[in-house]
Image (cartoon, rainbow, N blue to C red; front, side, top):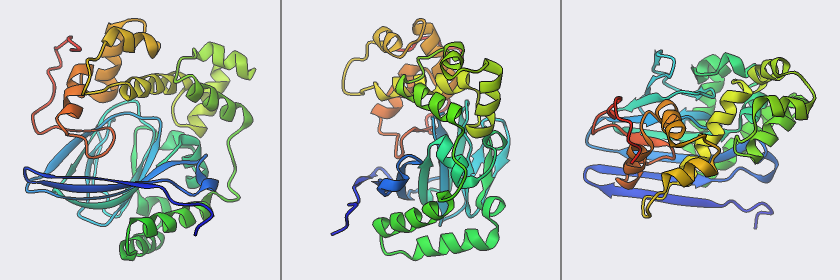
Length: 305
């Protein structure tokens, strides 16, 4: 028996021309400060699929085995990386398109874990998608894809990812003490810590902290706090129960319900109510994805219900 047992969970949906399965897994213990989790995903549908990818406090690495995804980035650029890609931390919404036949493994890094793994300034990746070939070179990208593709099951793929990530993280430069502490404080408070107060806690100016965050996280502390507040609000939504939006806004540190709505529009591309209905309709094969088959939300709407 392994000293570090692998915990996995499988979610499936097979109905109405949709057939997808995802296996969610944890990294090995030594990587958990850098990696939030793994996902092994397979989808076979009768139609092309478009999904809205909402903002989150993570940096996903996608290793692709199927037809390439077409990504419409939050900055307006369009890319179609065949081997897979890394998406830097974003304070906007992007769109992913597929033929409906997808097969991939996803590694969700913390921003500081991604910097250590990639060994790049994270500001260069903010609001961008970069292909695996550009990050690792064609030979390394092909070797990684081939080994994962040939593995017998999701757990075996996760063990291979452990080894790949561990080899790159080991010996890489960690975050500066100030940024590491600031990131932990923002995470602990779910973004409910004002940037000026955070800088005073760390013992530096707001300008200096913002510059360090740009390099090591990708976005300024204020933008990161905004994403963490939004992420907290999303975690409180339960499609099976009545949602008290004013209470959600208060618990997550929003000034009022209008502030909550503005952030959902920016970070989810929908009002809170529209996003909740998407979850209730089962349009969420991967956390944070909302099917756009029914069309985009009305940008003029101000109702969160």
